[in-house]
Image 1 (cartoon, rainbow, N blue to C red):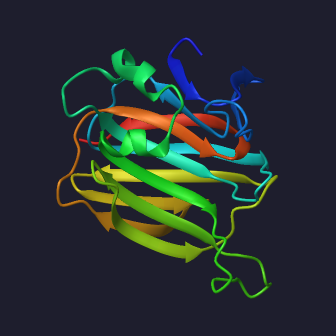
Image 2 (tube, one colour):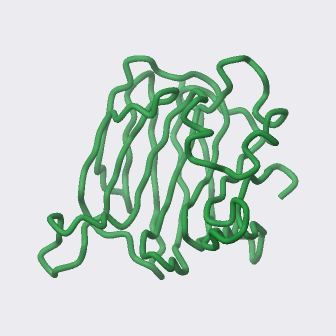
Length: 201
């Protein structure tokens, strides 16, 4: 945890080499959401791979969120302004600069797989402004399943893959540059593992 800091959440800890994140108690201040930030600045063009598994979610959202290229438009380091985001409200991050990818249980009864299960909802957004760049309903986001996530960003082109399959691509007309990587969840207990970010030249 020495290279990470946490905003919100019930508890975030490392166990068996995995970053566990529990955020499913809205009765606690910030207890229903959590964001863990890596302190290492990453380049604007990169390939990111990591694994994630939802252990439980009382609301069934199975929420997996990735923040990248994040910075404060004022120029202040995010670590220095972390107290203003202590409760990790989603809107706190919409005023910052960067991109968000969400992968979660869709919850839309119109979007179902042939077996009757809900399709996952995948979105790519730009901040500040929380502007939607691309959206798709596909696959599933289930508890107890380890998902291999992949993100490629080159300039304004952002792609998301799941278990090696490209699922969604968006183009950001105002691409972010260098910034920080954040792992986030909402009303979910999950773990992250094998986080690997490779610069692209």
